[in-house]
Length: 87
Image (tube, rainbow, N blue to C red; front, side, top):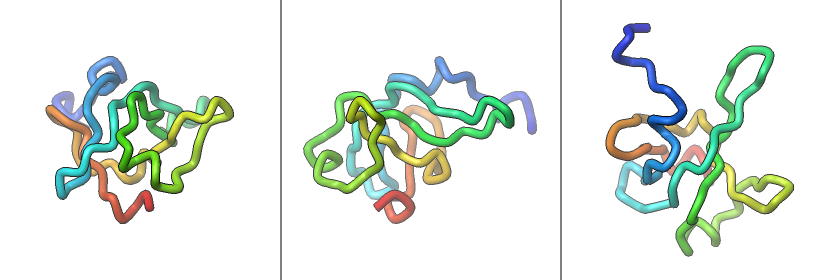
């Protein structure tokens, strides 16, 4: 992996999460990962939109919405996710 392909969590947290069609989901509040392997599992949503609240997404024990990290397509000014991979 090239150095420019790497992203630090602080570069992702706070970014707006959108679908490839432009639907807004909320902001990245935190990232859940497997400690033994380092595999990224979920993004915890902060300030979820009303659209996102209606989806039947997995939630944390505290009720925060989770988006599987496997749905992430790109990270730039926004975190772009494949909506079909999360609903």
